[in-house]
Amino acid sequence: MLKKFFLIILLLLLADSLSAQNVLFNSKNRLSFADNLFCEQDYLRAFNEYREYLKFGYNDTVIFKISISLAQMGRFSEAIDYNKTLFGSLRLSEEAKFEFYRNLFLSNRINEFKYFYETDSFIPSEKEVYLKRMLLTSDLLSMKKYNLNLDELLKAFPRSIADTLTNFYKRLSFPNQKDPMLAGIYSALIPGLGKVYTEEYGDGITAFLLTGILTYLAVDNFNADHKYRGWLFTGLAAYFYAGNIYGSVSSAHKFNADLRLSLDSDMKIFFNKNNYFIPKPRFICD
Amino acid sequence: MKIILSIIFLLFFLPLKAQTDWERWQAKEVLYLVGKAEVRDYSIDRSSFGSTVLSSIRNGYYFLISDLDGENCPFHPSCSAFAVEAIKETNILQGSLIFADRFTRDLNFVKNPNQYKIHEGSKLFDPYYNYLLSETAIFTNNKK
Image (tube, rainbow over the protein chains, first blue to last red):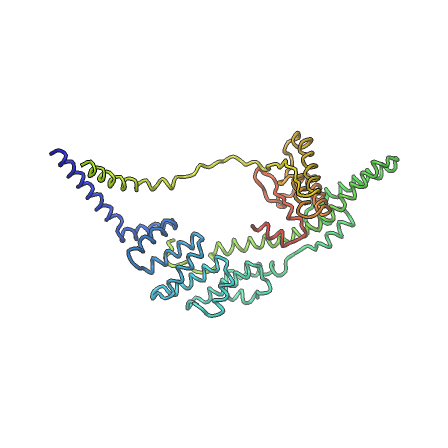
């Protein structure tokens, strides 16, 4: 009798637990939980929940949100695949096409971007200005100065950033570079002068002092008839003199590379901070 | 009866087990110790005659001078490691010139902080590829 009683209690508890699970994991709850995760920017778990939700049925908004979650996680190739599935969607076709181009741009697949853009494929209506911006930004960030035209650049972006864009354009097209050959000649004439020319003043003075001291020691030892030490210091002086000429040339190269690196970093920070001057994806929560 | 009870137990066990999902999200332990800046290579490189001579000289310097004196070079890689690397990557003449330049820069007491990146252990990061006379090599390697 007692056994039967416990069995019934257990069965009742089991039934209750199972029914509770059904309520918890129904499609509506899954969707609202996934939306909540999406707004909390927990894109990995939102993506998993949306995928589970899709097992209940097709929903283009959910597919669109999956593509955004993937793009936000940097999984651009998968996001692009999801974008493509929405090209035939009635409501989200234009947005999906735009996201497709955005994901190509952000994943640096510029050749594909250009191919689709130039062959007039999947161009979202009323958003061509943003596609143009992406193309110009890509040329600017990859420092293709021969592809760029200042007027075209200023026309494509908002007027408020005209000064910044002009500054970037000038730094790219007319950089204040140092001539490596000249740096080498300067150092050959006066040791360390090439380094001063490339704005490494401390290194220039050190090179001058080092070569000067070694030359003085060589001359002094020859005068005192210490030939062995004289030749030793002559060799060392010549070695560091040649090293300084080489160093000045390489320092000019490094100076020029640093100019490019600093421009590259400034442009990346500027465009990234301003979201590349393209609108945020739809459904993203602020 | 026992079988039924076991089935019921298992059926209850599954939802209970499902609740332990949060365990996957436990935070990892973070180590705040500063890593050792340089791991020294004491091996003799037998790939060529030049490499054998070079690595022997480097080891001699390590055993007789550097290990006794301590890790004092302000740069990473240290001057000795830099010289070996530069000679291996270029040739004996260019590598020696690169080293002469590095040695001169090392003697400079007032180092320009904007000239170098800071490596772990507060060392100044100064790799050989910045001195290969190629703007593109410097740009691509530093952009990584």
